[in-house]
Every structure is written in structure tokens, then in C-alpha cells.
Image (cartoon, rainbow, N blue to C red; front, side, top):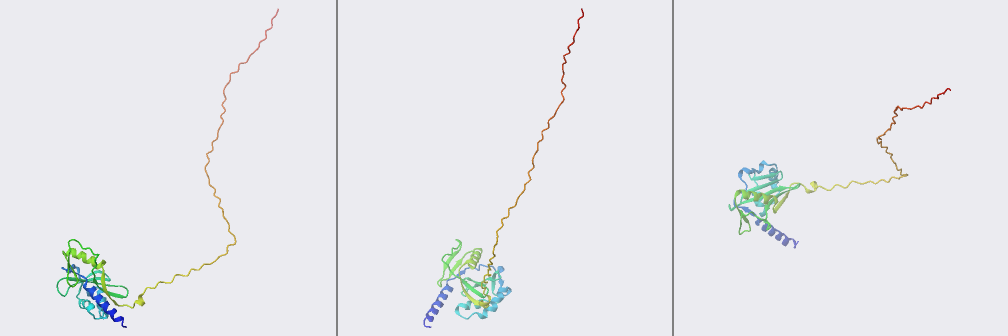
Length: 228
């Protein structure tokens, strides 16, 4: 129990540090025409109904106070919304990513990442509280905001809305494989005889006999009798 308190305080300080190391935009990256009231989305209705399960603390206060029925969000998909709101000082605009899995709803802040590379036409300004303010044209900030929200690092608070043990997709047992041994008494080799018919050209030689007339000279001997 004595080891728990220092660990808890360290964790709390770490969370506070992470929440302060975020991004803000000098201008709202999303236009009003691109946004919709959160209560008009199915996922938004689930979020509003789950707020009662979010504990009250310094880390969750901003989430809870900012999620009202008329809060404006950028609708990405059925389970992914981006909330845009002006910060308390009025010096910039912050984004909150709202998403969920099968059993938890997550409220996420954008986290700084030293590997992030910003376009040349975006100016970076480091504030005293650790927040990085991004300045640029609205179209450029719009693309950057989408990139950070969809693919950037985030710090999230997860609130259960379903019992994870009931929706956990356990692996189905592998089907039982039955191997049956069959005795082989005799192996019979079957040889198939294939008869191929090949056409054969038959050449018939015919002997032609012609009658050729032959002139035969007959020698006739005439005996002459001489009278005296």
C-alpha cells in the first residue's frame, strides 16, 4: 500500500504533463458548414449517454463540459468523430477525437510527436505551458488537422459502455480431426489400353495392258516345177 501512493502520484503527474503537450490551431481548421451537432449522429447519442460513467477529475472536466448536445463535430465515420472547440483563453482551437471499440468509448487529445513534420507554410509557435500552436491558412490547417486526428499520436481516456468479458471474441476451438485407418488388402494396378485410329493412305497400282498391233511378215515358199 505504501508503494501505491507514490506510483499513483507519478501517474497523475505524467497524465497532466501529457495533456498539456498537445496542439492547438490559430484558426478553426474546420468550417462551420463541415460540422454537425453531435446529438444528430448515432455515435454522438451514445457518447452523451455515456458521460454519466466518466469520473469527475481535472483530466475529464474539459471533456465533460465540452460535450453538450449542441457541440459541433466533424463526422468521419459511424465510430469516429472530431470535436472542434475554442480553448478557454480564446487563443486557439483544440481538437478532441471521439471514438470507440466494442466495449469502450474513448476521448482523445492530440499528443505531440517529435517525428511529426509540418508543411513549410505552417508556422509553429511553442507556448509556455508546453502547447504547440500551429499557424497557417485555413485549407492547410484543415489537411493537417485531419492528418493528426486520423494518424497522429493521441492521449485517450477510455470509458466502458459494455462488459468487455461479454463481447470478447474468444478464439473458437479447432475442429477435431479424426483419422481412420483403413486396411488395404490388395493394390490393383489398372492399365488402360488406348486405341488410336490413324488414317492410312492406300496407294493401289494398276497395271494397264494395251493391245499393240504387230505386223508379221510371212515367208511363202513357192516351189516351181520345171518341165523338160
